[in-house]
Image (cartoon, rainbow, N blue to C red; front, top):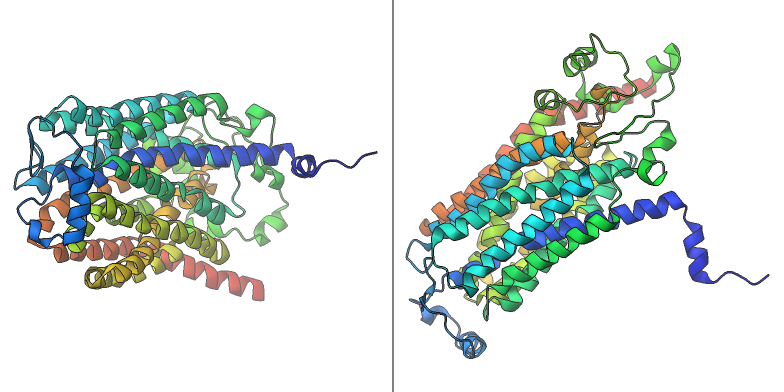
Length: 528
C-alpha cells in the first residue's frame, strides 16, 4: 500500500472538531479585523482634511518636495482650500475633527448596549452579515463626500453616527461565536492571539488609507467599505455559530460541561459529585469572585424560586441580571478608562506624529502602525500571564501600573527623533492595549459563562455588550477630550491619559485584593 501524501497526513492528523474550531478562529479573526480596518481611515485622513498651510517652514525641505511631487498631478477639487478640505480648513479644525470622532463613538456606545440584547435573540450569522453590509455602506458614504464635492459638516457627522451604530453588531457576535467553540482551559492565550485582529485591522486600515490619502482621500474610505462588505458575504457563507450546528463538540465538553450561546442553544450538565468531593474541590472562580454564592444565584434567577439547575432554560438573561454577575461592573468601569486611552491613540496618534515630527499624513499613518504592532504583543503577553497566574485582574493591574509612567516618557522621548519614537510606540502599544485586549476577550468570556449563571450561558453576548459598551463611553470621551486639550499643548493630552490609566487601576483594586486573598487561601488549603 502506498504511503499517504504529506498533505493528506496533515489533514487526517487533526480531528474534524479541530478543523472546524480552526475555521471559526480564523474566520472570526478576519471578520473583526475588517471592522477595525474600516474604522481606521478617519485618523489617517485628518492630516489631509486640515493641512498646516500657514506654517510651511516647519516642514523639512526634502519632505516638502516629495510631498509636492505626490500631489502635483492631482486635480484640485472645487471649494477645496489650500488649508485642507472645507469645512475642516478653519482654525477650529481640532474641535471639528473631534466632533467626527465623538459622533461615531457616542453612537457606538449607545448601540452596543442594545446590540448584545438583540444579538442574544437573533441568529448570529444573519445579524453579523447585515451589520457588515451596513458598515460597508456608511464607511464608503464618508468617502463619497470627496467625489461628490460635499462640504457640509452634518453629512460627515451623520455618516459617522450611522457607521457607529451598525458597527456594534460585530463585537458581541464574534465573541459569542469564539466563546461557543473554545473552553476556559487556555482562554487567555487563545483570546490574546485572537484579539490581535484589532491591531491587524488597524495596521491594514492605516496602510490602505495611507496609500490614497495624499492623492484621493475618498478612496481611503471607499476601499475599506468594499472590503468589509465582501467579508460580510464570507460571513454569510461560512460562519458556524455553534459546534452543535456542525455536529461537533465544544472544547469544554471534554470536561463534561459546555457553555453555549445564541438562540436555541443547549447545555450539557456536569455530573454531580459526592458531597465529600464537592466540599474538597477548589473552584477559584467560585471562591474568588463569589463570596456570597447562593445569594447571588437567587438574584440572577428570580423566576426559579431558588437555585435549582435548569437544563434547557431558554430565556436570555436580563440587563440587570448581567450587571449582578460578580466582576462585570468593576471590569466595565476599568475598561471605560482603558479604552479612553486606547482610542485616543487610535484617532489622534497620526495627527500628533504629523505635528511633532513634521511629516506628511501618509508617513505619519505608516509610523502610527507601530503602536498596533506593540498592541499585538501586549494582548498575547497579557493572555499568557493571566493564564499562568490565574489572575485576570492582577494582570491588568500590573500593566496599567507600568503604562502610566510610560505614557509620560512617550510624550518626552518622542520629540527626540524617529528612533526614540519607534521604540516608545512599540512599548506604549503593548502596555495600553494589553489590559484592553484581556478585558474585552478572556474576561468577557469568563464572566459570560460564570458559575453564578448555574449553566445558563445565554448571557455571553449581553455581558460582552455591557463591558464593551461601557468601555465605548470612554472611547468617545478620549478623542473628545484630546480635541479640547490639544490646542493648549500635547502635554496636557498625555496628562489626561495618565490620569485615565490611574482610574482604570483604581476600579480593579477590589478584584485584585480578592485574587490575592484567593491565592493565599488556596495555598493554605493545599497545605491542609
